[in-house]
Image 1: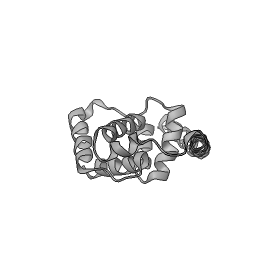
Image 2: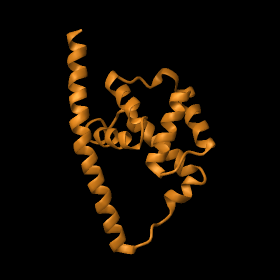
Image 3: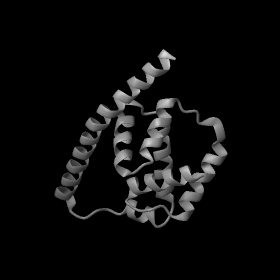
Length: 143
């Protein structure tokens, strides 16, 4: 349970910049309890989830990697779950639904910044996680 609470807290901060409300943590835990063993993850998927739960930087690296190279990964599904919960629960839905100021120039600036951050995270994440994935595959094939 503590591991799942840590995941939820890190993912909520990564997606909204805020700690999760108790309701959100409760629903996240409830979802995992009801899901049980249905969510089978291979060793690399489990590694991505473990490393991403360490903090927002690791979540950004793992998420950018998984977005391109493992779009059906357990990590992506967990992030989508937390985002869906954030969109439905106060006070996070207010922050997510708020239209930022700045009109078109501000929107272009924010989009360029987000794109640059994603690209940087993808480059670093791909370098790290591709090596880990090859190492894990080689290790399992050697066994």
